[in-house]
Amino acid sequence: MIWSQVYDPFGNMLFSTVAAAIPVLVLLGAIGIFEMKAHLAAMLGLVAALLVAVVGFGMPAGLAGMSAVYGAAFGLMPIGWIILNVIFLYQLTNEKGEFDVLRLSIRNISDDRRMQLLFIAFSFGAFFEGAAGFGTPVAVTAAMLMGLGFSPLSAAGLCLIANTAPVAYGALGTPVIALAAVTGLDLHELSGMIGRQLPLFSLIVPFWLIWAFVGFRRMMEVWPALLVAGGSFAIPQYLVSNFHGPWLVDIVAALVSMVCLALFLRVWHPKNAITEPPRDWSSDEVADEHKEVSEEALASRSVVKAWMPWVILSVFVFLWGVPQIKGMLDAIWAPKFPVPGLDGLVQKVPPVATVAHVERAVFGFNVLSMTGTGILLAAIVSGLMLGYGPMALVRAYGRTFWMIRYSLITIACMLALGYVTRYSGVDATMGLAFANTGWLYPFFGTLLGWLGVAVTGSDTASNVLFGGLQRVTAQQLNLNPVLMAAANSSGGVMGKMIDAQSIVVASTATKWYGREGSILRFVFFHSIALAALVGLLVLAQAYVHPFTKLVPEVTPIAAPAK
Image 1 (cartoon, rainbow, N blue to C red):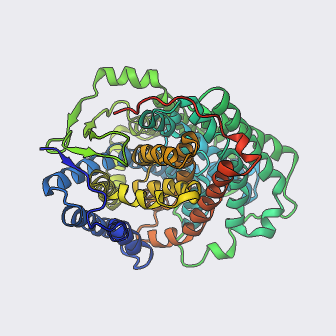
Image 2 (image 1 turned 60 degrees about the vertical axis):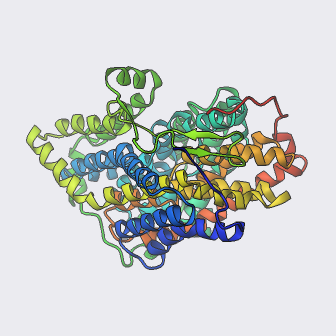
Image 3 (image 1 turned 60 degrees about the horizontal axis):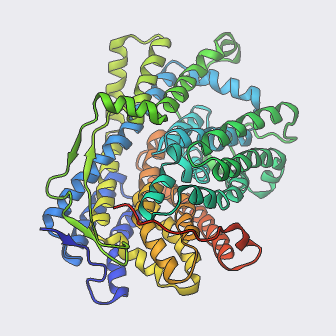
């Protein structure tokens, strides 16, 4: 029997919205305020979500339970699979001391900590976001910064801040493609609209990142490099998104940014270089474990060998993101399993959906084409090149799995929570509260995208969840639906740094278990402040000349995908 979602179970939107917010408040409060272990906080949040869904919103217990199982499975495959294999690669290189060589080679680009952070977290991280997404950039760049001697909080928190502007075009444009599918809006119009919002923040984020690291005065010492890194990313981001499409935006922009920054640093150097971590980052933190060797010993090692694992990783991640290769691997083996007791049994209804339709629940076990599998193969190839034997690799993999076991549990519980709120309609109830803000909707609709990513952990999931609502609300308020659908994705990127999934990925990559609350408290202000700035830009695009010139004319809208 099909169950239809109910968005106002208490007959009062205020009460229903408060009830809908309980799971998120429990999860974030347990982590950020009470500093509970992340896996315990995730379990508590999941219990709260199940109670709200069943008792508050009338969802049958069986449907709620299966949605939790479905979410947990997705949390482990592909997200947990990515994290496990990235950390495995990091452990292999760290045990051999190759990170020390890597650190010395990066100093040849710049020995200034600000420039190292900018190059790795912003420019290099954007490449991984564009090629893979799903936590890969934070896992890789946070691990690399730890190997370079950054403290856990700086590596984790700053990588989360850096991984914002590229998110909308992550995984070869998946969020934009999903947004077009659920709204029926033109893919190229959506890509171009987002490309007229985010480049401004691609220019701002490098400045914001270094300001968060060392303060305004030390940030202004390196403004030329920040302008080069941000500008060389923003311009290709605009051009590719508007004149090509969403698929290669991040990859092209990241490569241009890395090349331009590296070349610029060959002719320009900070006058007052920061070669040691600032004092503010060194208190109450543990240092990463790596072998300390002399520069003479490092100089005798091969820099190429030290970089090779990360070059191999980049190649494999890129290949696994190419649609043709994904299709070829899926043709070999990619079983799909309809979730019993859930698939086709939940109906999304207006006003969240344009027309009522059932929600599908099919778990795709496309393990061959998962990004994590490409990362695992890259790790194995790198391990063999570093001198590991087959059994040594197996033992290292076992140690890695045991080391991150609680992180995998946490991610499974958090995704289970997200899927319960999605299938029960709890997320949609919070979205409807934002939709009732009248002429301020362009601002609050942007924050709706931020909320969607903060809850689901994915810009793609947020677009699927709220894309239809954005389109319907925009039409009711005589706003451009392309603008508001794009705002959902652009605002969502700023929620990426506070979603519990990303925070756990960062704490795992930096070996800072149990300190997720410290990371959340550090990034929360940056997240809400940047999201508010995106909201103000969208508000201006809706009403204020000449910003309205950035918004395309409305074209006929197709029926949304079911």
